[in-house]
Length: 236
Image (cartoon, rainbow, N blue to C red; front, side, top):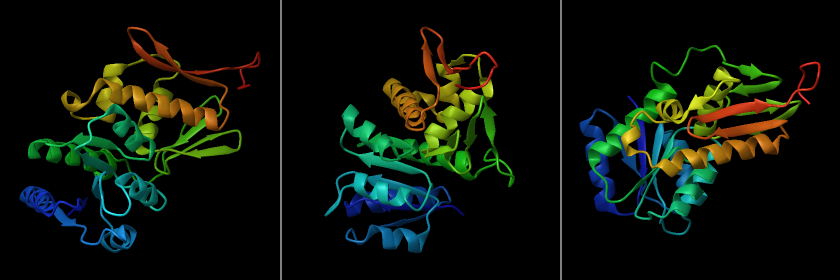
């Protein structure tokens, strides 16, 4: 049974979320010491974290960064902050999704199930490590790593999923709808700007390892991965 950990300092909301998750046969526990979140995380070893932004001592962005140092488990932010920059910061620090309060419990369950299916479910792949490579650019989605000419950069889950599809369809255009289908099962709950943010983050990761090329926007269609090559067909 999957373990969900709730990091929310409102005890009433934390208790309601726990009851809701357990109603759908998920094991849930909430944090009770906001001074040492990491000790509780490592003890409970959750499959997914629901994380508030406004917390005592350190905010959720800080704890998201700490969790990402030791785990790639899905992290969904739950917050009353609804600004675009709040969502951008959450994604930049390694979150997989963001929900604003108040929200319907059915939406929480849908998003939690979506992340669990993606990472641990029947579509998560077999035990053999997957590698997708085009023109010298190699993606290891299980490790959340991207490699180019000896350089390696760590990826967030959404970045890996996005690059995986672009590499698989290379050099063809991938529609926005196809990317949304791959990254989020419940498209009706996804803000249009969220995909743009993830595209920008993936482009930044390509730049960090000096990839000769980038993700190009094809107006009215979607996106495609472009890798620059020399006359011999090898990456520059």
